[in-house]
Length: 252
Image 1 (tube, rainbow, N blue to C red):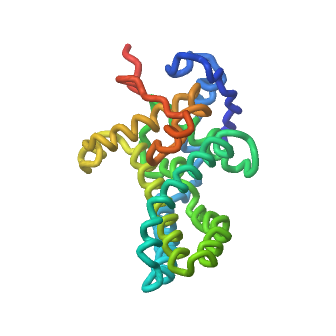
Image 2: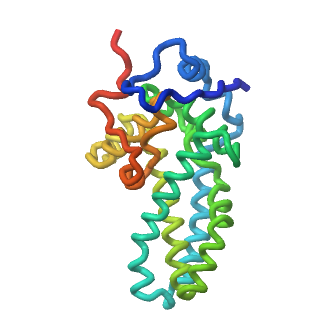
Image 3: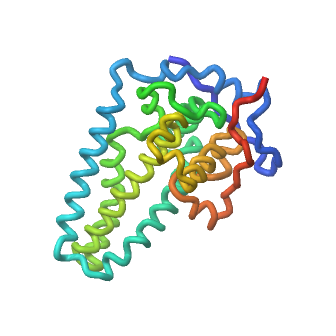
């Protein structure tokens, strides 16, 4: 197995946002990274997706059962608030444990040292389906998130009954699936995205460009942490607009 080098962040005040010049630790680590060496031989993206969807379906069914005939109109009106809270949580987790060697360190290893070395802003698409294993979160992530969110779920139940708890759980499942779907699509080849129509949508292209900008090695620890919608980035001052033509392969 190839070992990715530890990436040292650049100066946050550095004005340039181009890809790092040749010879920097970041560029050497990315150039030496071989995606196939970091995937199990028997890995199946389809099994990965199926397991994730199975867990999501079960948690969603639990949320629906809790909300059915119990959730009040006020409970349902809180759904957008739950999405905003989830957006801030996404930003926090992405900015800190996923980009800094802190607990749980596995998140930093899987994201900064694997995902960002495998996919730089000029090398974003997967070349085969199995490489989605370097994009998607482990299939058991939803179970961990459910355990972590259980105290909030119980608090919602105590505060306003099972209906509110069910709405919260449905929002959490929907947000996670939105995150995983968008992130995977950002790394799908453009030709396939255009055939699937989604690649022609203006809003998708803007979101994809924001995420590509985050993959500039010099900027990844400073800007564009929202993979979904850049709400928390805008509120917390970490949104950085991509430049026209950014991420295109260099001309020869």
